[in-house]
Length: 294
Image 1 (cartoon, rainbow, N blue to C red):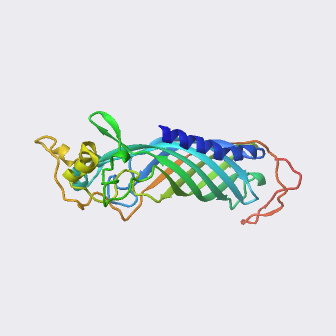
Image 2: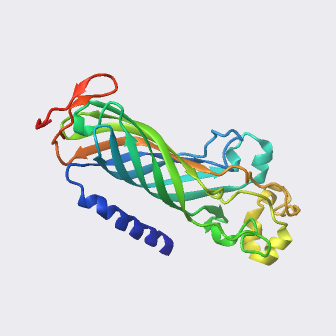
Image 3: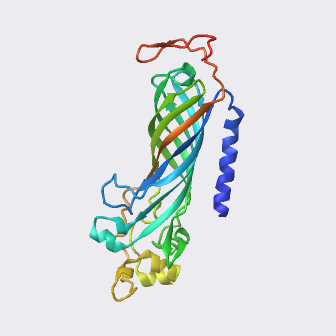
């Protein structure tokens, strides 16, 4: 909770400069969904995703010129995965599961080939890319309670000769597409889809290999050992842990996890003033008129 409060405080501080230049900008909401692709998805297919969850975002967009804009967005969402949903028997027997809240602050640049709000184009498709900072915290259900996984070190993190615990606040690269439709001079409706390239393989707390149950028990405790290897919970003879040697495959460390967002956007422009853009867009259509109000 303390880490999350610090993250929210940082987000507010970073958003304030945008609020100071809000005049002649667009503010809005994004209602949609979030999900992820990683080690706990229904199949080994690269495009296989975990369960999708509802998300909510707020954004502030400012046109830079007739074809480009900058947008700051704060998003709250959730993502999860469960081996029980896999189509592969071996993954089902692994019996891992998790869920995590997601907080993201992103800053992206938009390319609008047909013009931005300031040019008065009704339909405005765009591409975007930029940088984001996000906070996550994978948890799992164990004996009817949610347990945070990162502090446990389920793959030996923190033990001698193992990696340090992974960071819960990280950087990602947002990439995506969208389109807006200008309903009135001030109101836009649109759709937006983006993927996030991360630099961690631990969105789901699964990356590399198992640690021998007894070694993990001794190094990080009983709970880490119990949640590091949950295949024994499916044993008909009771919860008898399967003693796997250290180095047995648990996840795929060669591929980092990704997450994605998709949603409907509702935007409101603070000003309907058209900038003095006079020219033609890539389609050859003329737009803009000095001094004209839209």
